[in-house]
Length: 516
Image 1 (tube, one colour):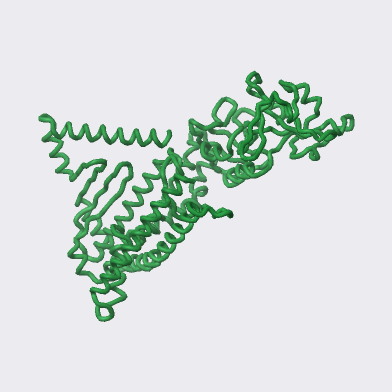
Image 2 (cartoon, rainbow, N blue to C red):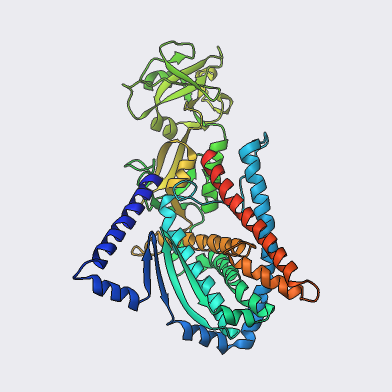
């Protein structure tokens, strides 16, 4: 699904929802019942926004907050320390991210800046697979709820009245909130306020640690149902638009052993081998010129033959020596003769070339039999457009021996469209996709909770950092040391700078995302 299609569906769903809501609300038959339902259950609906609010959870928060008051004091004190430290680290990180982004947009340095930023703008369908949207939304929703639970429990522990808890959805992004009594909060000491304001960030940090621990322990936790193997990975999912679809392509349940000559032992090897194919020289097959003449579907041409369609792209000369009448199993191959040192092209069957012949990088790598002429053996390589690779994926399929899947295209498309796992199900009825689903969800929980922890505590308007910084300043600078007017001035200046910094990161992040 393309991003434009996704946005169209999203707007269509919201439009239909609002039309149905307005129709029922204004209906003489259903209007009263709909209105009563919304009021009784504290549900409010506006443009692209729906919210639910309840006071039913207040007793739960109060019970937890007062059950272990002394232990919770230590718990939330640790949260204050970490949140204040994160406030400074997050601000420095935003400054660095903004610097790198501006450098990449406007100055385009000759030496590429590593594009491995800790913080980046996420747009589904652009820099995040559209099918991962459910992982993103569920992790944001759960992280937000646990974040607000932290505020509520800390407030209950400090004796601050909780008015209620709620959840909402804006467009497609979900969230949560807790409503605290502002008068009770203002009467508390700065340290008590810090415990409440920093509790959400503290809980997000704990979620990050828990998610990281579960990722490490996942193979052990799933050991009764899944096992790992010393070689290969399991294909658990393939997107419908994957270029490896088809009867001769990859299938869910395939056991991948090698990519070209790169052996795969685990999921890390899978990514490293794909990256290696992108950077390394195209491999070829050792073949005699007699063999080429016998299996070629066309006359063998030299580079100067005018009958061959050719193009120049990225300063690389490329030609397709297989015309429209050539079988789909054939590819254009390129090789250099030893005697005349001429570059030759021939349309050859790809599967025959890789299955029965020896791999090579150059003609020097080819071994010959004693009864064959040394000059008759050449290293023939698939001749593809710049950025395109001819890749052989060696797999084991249930009920079959080793099977070679041939792929021609950008190696990055394999990563984007195929999901693999280190874990193999022990029993037939166990779904092979489950470990990948759990792992993906934990990875998103780690990323989203980490982002909430870093960004929410930055001194910025409308974020926890706005109130945390004010309480932090009041705690370390009493009225005797610094007048209230000066503290307010410092707060406004810092909040203005923090808001501008965050806004600049978002703006230039989008610019960099859509212009690179």
